[in-house]
Image 1 (tube, rainbow, N blue to C red):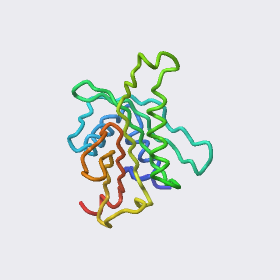
Image 2 (image 1 turned 135 degrees about the horizontal axis):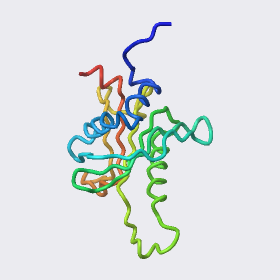
Image 3 (image 1 turned 45 degrees about the horizontal axis):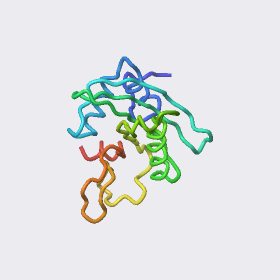
Image 4 (image 1 turned 30 degrees about the vertical axis):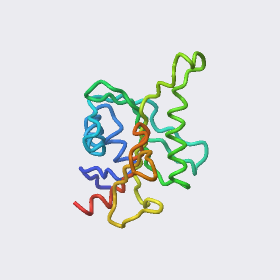
Length: 172
């Protein structure tokens, strides 16, 4: 068997090897900074739970759960998903909401005053497309909560970034 000297980042093994190891964390920081397109600049990150397999096969796998520190000192949480999901949008809303709910203390909630850390769910859609995607040329979907009538951002600190890696590579 011949071994290649290159790693395909679109495979589970390649993605985990390139972005899921402490040694290569700078690659992940660079990727995330590109996805945030200047809204955030990650200076540091900590890998929290890694590869938590869902309760059932169709639940999918959480690839990375990260605590990030921006260049201005603020901290936020990112979950990176890399598997096809049934009810993708609902499931990602559930994952993001769970990350928020898990921040609540068991006691003294009044004192906590709902000081919620920002949460972002990033989904690498390898081998499947965005459900109800509007344009065949889109490969990056940057979603936040906004006023439906005005389009003005209502709450920016719960976000979803969906990217179709193969489509992105074909347009560059």
